[in-house]
Image 1 (spheres, helix red, strand yellow):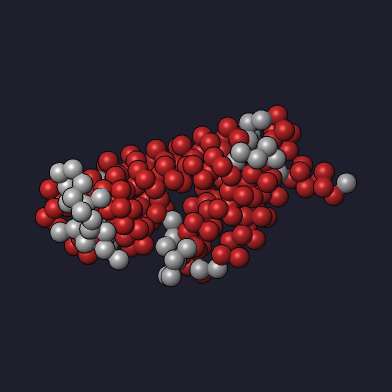
Image 2: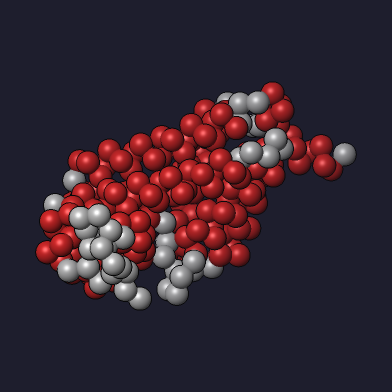
Length: 205
């Protein structure tokens, strides 16, 4: 599907649709394997127009990744809005698994893919990936810092938040290796029980 639309302002394409299409291309193939020719092909916008509008692939990726970051963090906030930490984390992990398992073949996790490519991606992309992971960690830490969550946690909320983020990176790698969403969900459920053992004991009483 092409995303070339009638002239909008001074550009001959709809930028929102173009960035969404570029995001899909980067997400499916990764930063290194996606060329400006690939983006031109999926968007229907000529490569020269892309360079004129964005300068280079790094700038285009950063704009697309900004959209990804906003969408991802919004979904995290929604999942963690449940006051029950068990429900919140379970919902979070289910969303993460669905997010990386969509597509045929599945698209994986864009952040983890990009993190593995940081030696060739550049400092600006490295900084942006780190900021997303920091924002992700902060949201989880805040959600697990409530009195109700602290009573159930097996460790400090800051450590728990780091563990959750690290575990999601492991899920991303396992998804690439096995492409088995149900297995990822089962491992996530066990991880939540390990992180919140007091909640399990309360259910068993």
